[in-house]
Amino acid sequence: MSAGKEPPKDEPAADLGRRDFFRVFSRDAIHTAATVVGAASAMRRGTTAAATELLGLGLDPNASAARMADALGIGVTSATTAENAISGLGYRSPYRLGDGVVHVLDQRRLPLAAVDIECRSGGDIAAAMRGLAARGAPLLGQLAAYGMALAAERNIDSKPFVRNATIRGTANALRNARPDVAAIGAAVDGCLEAWLEVGELGDGAEISLAIRAVADAVASETTLGLGRLCREGAELLAQPEGRPLEILTIDETGPLSSGLMGTALGIVLAIAAEARPVHVWVTETRPARTGARLAAPEMRASDVPCTVIADGTIGWLLRERTIDAVLVGAERIAADGAVANAAGTYPLAVLAARHGVPLYVCAPLAAIDREVVDGSGLVIALRPAAELLAVVGEPSPPPDTEALVPLDDVTPAELVTAYITDHGVLKPPFPEPVTGRSD
Image (cartoon, rainbow, N blue to C red; front, side):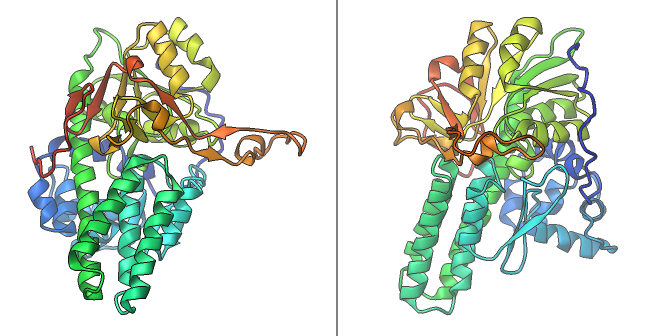
């Protein structure tokens, strides 16, 4: 198969029930992000103002809001109603905000069906994370923050000891849902700080507003930060003469994993938005096949040529095809630059180094955990054996078959060419996180 040729379309027909689902939240979103990275002031003015500017694409905000609402199947007709609907969505594809509820898109059901999980408590959000209904560190950080906001909102009128126990319990549940993801802990910490600043015996409504403000800030700062990350990556990767830029990646790292934009695949979409020819090779990514189920449809719907390969064929690919760069995400990064990411990243990095292909880790600085000195301290999440052994449509092995299913592996810093972040292209030692940047 020649580079750039799509694999045979023998997958079941997708029935998302939402017209242009992947397209709306991939190339258009990334093109927007590339041009609105200076919109921090708009984000601070509130969700509606931010949504209309971020989704404007240089067009009339009301018309753009109506277009987005139509694509989502919201069924509104007036521009004003459309703008309000977009505001309620939180301007992100993997989740939307409602009155006392966070609707989380169940990624386990994609691409065959778009089904929302109604999360009415922080515990519900923790369950969605733990069950892998939602994946991707930038997305999980946002959901964790809104999970804390739900806990505070539901306990506005509770006695202080009940409210305090609920907030602390929710924080623990969210951390434990995916202990390998740094963004969750960072978001939870920010919410706890806001709560304690008001005071454990403070007014319930004031506490709720303070935590919700942190959640909104996490969401908006993540969005603008990933916009910068995508711009940095697009500028870094030079265009080969006379052919597409060939990118190899693993897992789903597009808008579905992050919100309005992505990390590794967000960079690809930013390149495509510049009308530069690019082709993506994405590993199937076992055990949940997130590369084949999520990343590939997202790329194809954005008119980015994409070819899925089996996890075990990356050595063949690097030997037989021209690959310009490997782009991967990160769940957590140690102080020395070691990276915990989707299982399969480490062998991908080893083989990329063997074949002289640069590997870039694409992640915001929030993924860096300076309390983890090196890779030995990075948490590796283990999944139930059934996620590997019980595959729908395939015969199951004997019931007593043992299986070990790590969700992540660790790649040492020496195999990483550089880190593409929301604050530039970096190498360890990393700078302290910068806040409030609006360039």
